[in-house]
Image 1 (cartoon, rainbow, N blue to C red):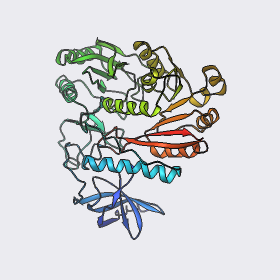
Image 2: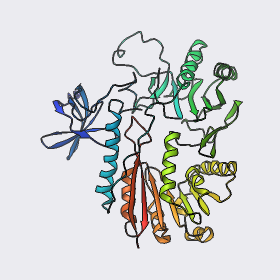
Image 3: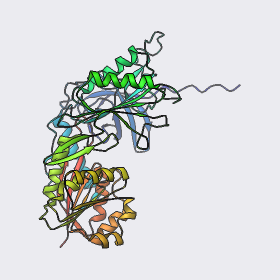
Image 4: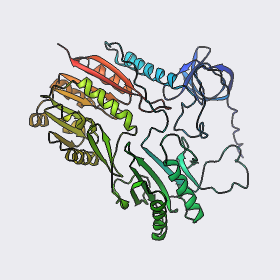
Length: 473
């Protein structure tokens, strides 16, 4: 009989100094000139023991334990869920330090990856609101909640139901959330109210592993700066009576909800773009306002989750586009058309292109809602839509606005831009690394004359960046 291999005890390096911030909310330490990327609630200046998770040829990955909090960048943590919930990994870092590192992250990526001539960077635009800034949160119901270290091994665990967020790396474990600092009230009251009502009425929570039982699956809460509220409940295996009970509870208890909806979803994932959404009470949409523009947001619509900071971002894009009123503007990866519509009254024509058909439908609705007649929107794979034939029909662009997903622009799109040579490109990115790669490709014809980082997501490592490129003389 073969003997079972004993698990090796993890390697722990003791009393290691944390040197600097790194990408993806990690920090850097060094031992014998070997780089260690450290995860956990540490900041430069802290001392910690490091439990090695992975060893590569050129670096190691480690978890910080037994932290001695000595960093000058530290600040008090607001949330009781910090350290388990993966949503706000930088709450322990002062906002000044957060924005300084984000600006440095942009600079490092553009310098090391793009390797193009760069101007002096504009100071990063910080967010006035560092908590309660999100306008959308999605919570998951589960009948198998996350267990704390103190609970593991105990027999009497009480209720195993949870309504909250996925624990990082675990699709099947949900952390019960009592108070979330990301969305303003009454978001917390709505979530906790639904949880208490379900528990009091024995309405079951979804089984995330077998996906074959449980009435309540998902809760989405959205709001606007004008204080409209949308709540969408996803049910799985609920009876009509259970659906009616939950929806009536929400309707009667939270009169501020202007759009109350539900969907029955028994699929293997939480997406409901292909499912019918029932408007139970109020309007089937909300309306967000930005300057003199209105944007209709339905349960399936995408919209920037920090609306106040998004407005400032769009204002900067408009400033850097510097339109004179006679330009043909192409808005690539337009989403629901927010930037394109924001620029339309300053341009002769706006042509928006987007992969997601549903987003394009929203863009067209919002153009009509605002009486904008010089903006047209098209759906399809960007590299297949943006062809010589398309450009011949709609006219060559004088200015291109591009706001691609994290992967950056497709090579065919970059090549098409180089072929039509617009005078100006304003490139908005949520990933400075892929933006830098694209800038290197565009360098054959364009020079960068503006770099302006924008913080859309305080308490996280994410950063947006605006770059303006001008055609070389």
